[in-house]
Image (cartoon, rainbow, N blue to C red; front, side, top):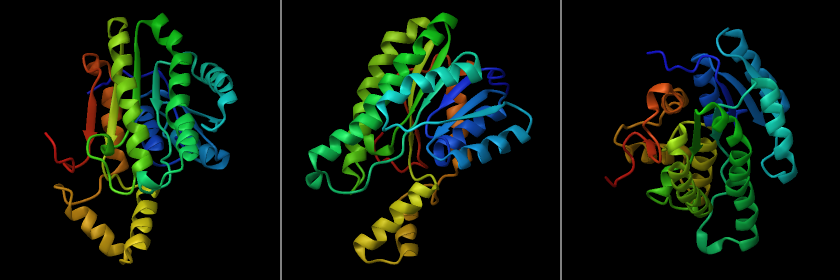
Length: 262
């Protein structure tokens, strides 16, 4: 299936590794031109070179820190310079530290709200003129299965990503008539460095061997395994596609069936 992404410009946040990189790779495989962003210039350059070596969509890089409020104009200018026009925005952030919500310092909550919620809203507002001018756009925000079923010991993530649910749904209603779709993609246990870090933290917290933690985690997933980054990226590529033009305002799960609700 041709997803109609050849030549589209995609700005993918936090894409030096993990889910963001997987999405950027999937979009480039479909012929989109992508801007990889993150704090690690070396990792960005290496991943862009790997994408470009495949000879499909092209990859560019821009060092960007979501904690830096003043860096948004420079990010958007760099994206337009590299891509020509921003047709696709993938809002992706790293996760906050684990911990119980009852123990969270309000100052820490405010800090992560800025980088995980406010910054995404600022970037989205800044790229909307490109999409409105074209009468076509895709905004995909990576959330977490915790917005539907709160994950134990991930209180900050559950709270902040849930704030994005209301924002994304409201934005989708505003933009649906302009050819711009807005969706959230919710990963379950996709095997990334972040998941390895969380498993290690759980092992330390409970005193279990990390292999036991992973075994128990896999047992709670109907699919019986962790997901692959490539599988997650493929779902994102479809949401960005021409064929997904009637999918908006949705929470799309990619979790192997782990969410228990209907």
